[in-house]
Length: 298
Ligand SMILES: [Zn+2]
Image (cartoon, rainbow, N blue to C red; front, side, top):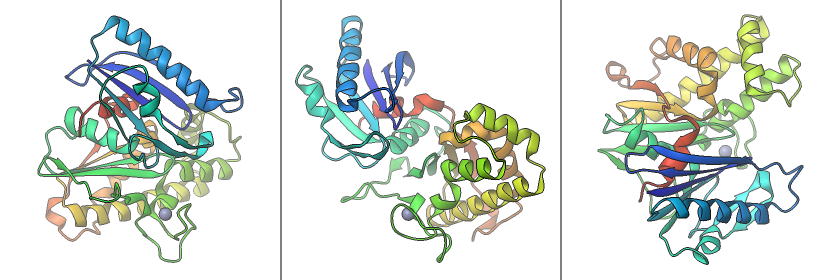
């Protein structure tokens, strides 16, 4: 058995994963910066306590960690939402457990999990896009994950789709994620619909289903889908995948967004090779994709 740890911007999930990628058992907790004063200490205590309980019950041979951003040499770096610059989670665990540990970007973990056990399992050439607070992804050609030597690469979210467009956190203008991340879309919708920014995704979805035909709301959704199709067209022309899988918060809004996307995807063919449009898929492993993918060795 393996332990998969999904350390997100606002929660930690820790699961026991078997060799078929099944989550045998899991525990989760919120990382609420308003309540917890020392986040790194809280993470350390929670992770070590949970691992201790797990190793009492299961024979564990590997620990994988999924984290946002660009983890380097086993360290987690720049978790902006949690105010963490660097956290050496590998060293923290190694002090107590002599096990192989791997730390990898969470969107890549989710992609690898979908490729190995989920929606992309039957495809050799595939792209996974995580539409969440930004856009992350991974690509597979002839079953192999594309991995550059220097940086993790595949910064599909920072592909420019409008040269004088919206300013991105990365400093460039017009990045794909400034138009198509779920965070940007939700903010735009909440502003237009005059909703409180603290409402749950569940409530937002409900409101959206009721009000999606209102002209200003419909316009935001149409532009979102249009931009998403432009981004997908670029991805298709570069990688020629057999399938593209969409994951992250997007999946939660399936009823509104995915249906609109599918309606327009085949009609608005910006792509070069129009005869072989890739299959569109939604992520199948949900919130567990990160912890499952974390346990798949590089
Ligand atoms: Zn950018």
